[in-house]
Image (cartoon, rainbow, N blue to C red; front, side, top):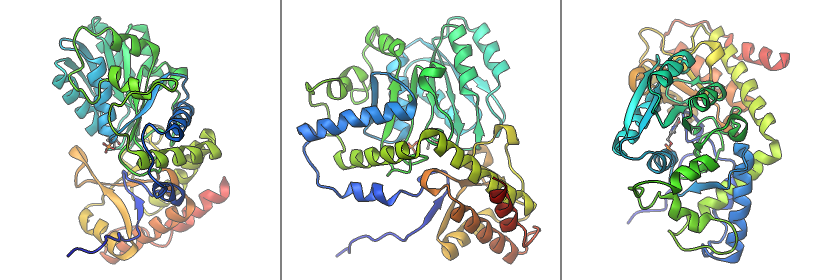
Length: 393
Ligand SMILES: *Cc1c(COP(=O)(O)O)cnc(C)c1O
């Protein structure tokens, strides 16, 4: 007979999931009620307002997809891309490749704009692609590329798309809550995020939002959305305005309590303060990493504060270091993905995990581990460099 599962207590500083705020975990254990219960409908209305706050939008079609970030991605593509549509897809890491896969599975044609892994999406290349493909319907890009730690200029990319009469699909899974995201200010048409990165909520939900232009495109499709579950025309019947809600699927009630709590916490802190906290902790971590003699993959002007890709020094077994951090410090950091597999560690500073205690502990643990295996690093300087950075703030 199996026993109850009691997970070890970890510090999660990888690419997600991130540490979940105890308030969010407590919300999960509140009593389950019916998904059409008037009290639950009230929660749904509040959730929508909170997501609109987080996304900085007044979009009516703003809701959480009942599945992880990947389903939010799929929801955007299956609703906006019809067979034969041309989509310009920017790829500078793993997730742009998944966008291409989505476009093609929708019967669309993906025009790829490739950039080096570890660099932001090139505005010049995107403009060129828009000029060469006047019939493109959508420009899709990843705002915060979690596989490399690169931040792209979403505002300028959206401006280019608008100048060429293209809709935009933006992956904000890792950016939301960690760096500025301004859906209405930047004119984003479709955006998806995830709960388990900078929102520090339990994994498994994907907040999405669609502009009026996107809604118009969705309601005027020539063909039915091929996914029944993700068809926004149907999901709207449940998440739409007012008390008239039709059953579509059973909402993950308790998971939605968690998202509500996570967004209440974000609103209490304030978006700008949350972004500033991520930036400050990143600066301290970076000071320590560089003092040790380690280097970043991404140039400093294109770096994400919440995801730090650090090059593995020559001759160091990267997996052994991660295992030792987990075994000895209960600290999780991430491995490289795709083209960067085996070459980098990915240190996340996401949401609740972005704090000075974690930064100092991670630097100390990494230094002790590298030093133990005889790696060529500067010893005894990382924690001090990070502390000096905090004191200078
Ligand atoms: C994590 C992530 C996803 C996928 O989210 P899941 O919740 O794992 O499905 C998509 N895009 C980016 C940029 C991510 O970091």
